[in-house]
Amino acid sequence: MYYLSLANEVLEGYSLTEKEALSILECPDEDILLLLHSSYFIRKHYFGNKVKLNMIINTKSGACPETCGYCAQSRDSTHPIQKYKMLDKDSIVQGAKRAHQLKAGTYCIVASGRGPTSRELNHISSAVQEIKEKYELKICACLGILKPGQAQQLKEAGVDRYNHNINTSKNHHPHITTSHSYQDRVETITKVKAAQISPCSGVIVGMKETKQDVIQMAFALKELDADSIPVNFLHAMEGTKLEGTDELNPLYCLKVLCLFRFINPTKEIRVSGGREVNLRSVQPLSLYPANSIFIGDYLTTAGQTDTKDYQMIEDLGFEIDYEEIEVSRM
Image (cartoon, rainbow, N blue to C red):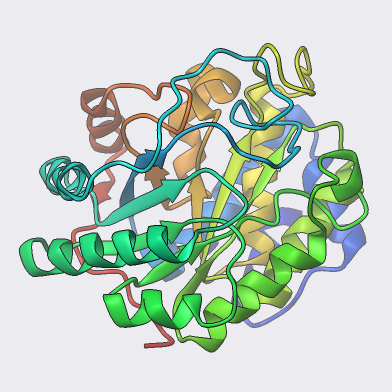
């Protein structure tokens, strides 16, 4: 009853203490269904049984100058991936057509690199304008660290949401990358909000962080007021700095999702990269705290087939959310 009582308090506007947050991550395995039920109590209040679908297109792959230890596209990675420069405009627009066919409400345009050049930003902006003319899709761009004025250009092109993950806690960040700071990431989110674009920012769990780090991530995103929070679970790739890291188990992943729901009750919580390999057979249970998933493949790893995702949603008695994502800052 403890978790359900806490959920009721959250619905009344209560904010968890760090001690209460830790109790969620340390929930006894035998109580996981009680925790999931309590998280679902919050999720259902704000989102009912609807599931938002998102689809990614990797518009520029590899050759990234950053040193992120989790990423196969990093300059330090030796993992074999397909590398290519920015896709042509038609390919980006065709990706939007595919997202529309897959019933995705949000199309995520992602590019490797520290941040977009002016030429790349003009290219993406032109593609977004055409997509907006053809399809009823929300557009999320994920292009790295933004320079002054770039967020406003994306806003004018029709970008609804911008993703820039904090990835980990402020204290753990130097253990993950040294080529940019945690504050660099926060400042990009701030620029996005100032341009009245909906901020999307999330995390990667399983990168040798502590439970306290995970708690700090959840509270940091609450403070940043991120509208959409993708929760990734590390899928450690051979040839990356974090190669061989395997700290997660399915029940802990569920507890992490519950934590993010309790701390960010009104926000879109998206179970994201690594869900297939880390949640394994309990994947469907992730939708009790989370209300959003990626459909199709990720950047350098494959997701499960779209038909399995549809079946998972249907078998749970949930339904795909076809309504447009509300962008509160527009």
